[in-house]
Image 1 (cartoon, helix red, strand yellow):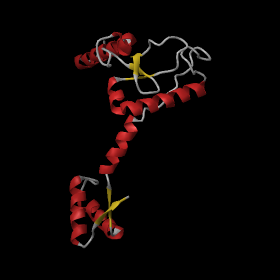
Image 2: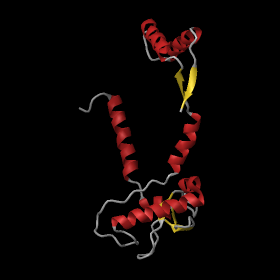
Image 3: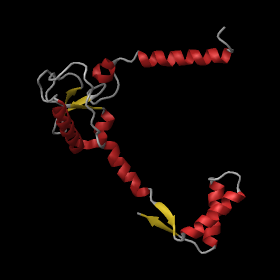
Length: 179
């Protein structure tokens, strides 16, 4: 007996999801399919100048290493960012012993991963907007926080922090930006 009917339904949904995941076709992902990529599907290869040189996976053996990027990531990086990424990737490949396509030292070695830098640049921009406020009088703030912990069943909560901040400001406390 498999159990309750709702358990069976959940089991079937999991099996269907796993089947979808496991039937993924890398040819579609790398460019033989119909979605993504500048050249009509999948990922594209970029050279050390940041120029698109073809579809990912179609380089000839012995060619200089070119890095593959999705259309979205390539757009975020821009030409200079793509060029910098390819140069970093080439340096990492060289260090790992794979300077040219097909020059692997041994079969089955792990891929060499290099961060593109697109998300790091975005995080730096976001951090400019996320400044942390700190109390000008930490002792007084600690007192009103402890009072909020006693007064409210749930702490931390928006209500408890708002109450503590209101009492702290009423008692002459203030806030400043932390660098």
